[in-house]
Image (cartoon, rainbow, N blue to C red; front, side, top):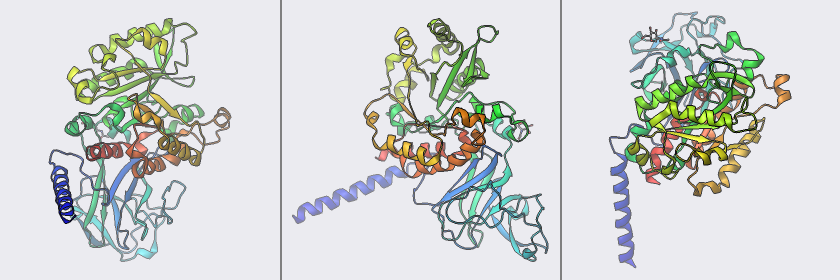
Length: 479
Ligand SMILES: *[C@@H]1O[C@H](CO)[C@@H](O)[C@H](O)[C@H]1NC(C)=O
């Protein structure tokens, strides 16, 4: 008996040792300890404000979260001259959770509400005053996990400047304690090559085994659109993303939800549709996918579905579309003989990185050299968060599809009903996204991420799904 125990102990030591040595692997670009303080930066949909969220915070009095436009290395306490204005922060944009709302957020240049209480107050500066603090948030004492919308606007021109070399850009957030020590830091970042960077960990997995960030209605974006200036009832319920396809892919999205309409009488025949509203030319979307894949060697699922306009009852237009897709993607099309059981390494070996998943089985059957069957979309068709949460929990709890290799996509967005759109009941898709994106982020981060496959959201930059997906994917090897 004692001998057995001894052996068991030895075995456990060995296991611990192996885990310790493999988790110190240096090649891993996204290390994480799930009990550590961690911060995220996201962008709200409605006003395009920077949002900052965190978990596992000590949440002591005197802690601050400071937002800067450069990478800060140190924070120093300064004595502010009396009367320096601090903008008060108490408006409907605040989406903080936990019990308390934020005390105040000084926003540079906003001096609308001079606060007389702060005369002679000590305040923070960054890097010896050489970089500016654009917002400061005081975490609520004792609440370890929070999410706030700041008043700092994000300019999507910054996002368009992202390249395959970009990691951090634009904004940094630092969590500091009373002494100014940086306990955690994050940045706004792109993930242009996350699959390739995790190759040694995930190369033997199938697409179905991974957590893949996706976008809902991926082609429903409008370049250089400013929702604060140009919003109409149509844009309010038609646009679903703020980045173009290239921007979505650069920021880590690997599943695209593509709804194509056919326009017989125009020179450009195929367009992305959202419902019955015409969005981007399909050509633009294809070009961006192709260029991205050629540049990064990442794998993309191109999910074609709905065909809402111009396809008629016959299959002629489908044949036109398929030959157009073949001509455009050429050698990049993953050959269906790979099947969904192919590992990432199998896919990379063939250098066929684009999966054409086509939601019309009779057509799939006719093109066994080009088309995969559709990704199964799990769509709750609900209008409120409690119902969406329940739906997402249910499909993940009783998930029989886990044992097959066909990918499934959790459609993590609210869907307005026709009359809701006409009466503008929900205030638009942006408002609906701001209402749920932080909740979805937390739900998948804390609970559903373990078994999630594709999760597709509206205005994905308002979620932490990409970071969460990468974290779960890199941990799968230890499971
Ligand atoms: C994007 O890059 C161009 C060229 O480098 C630069 O001139 C421009 O200011 C950048 N835009 C933003 C918003 O940073």
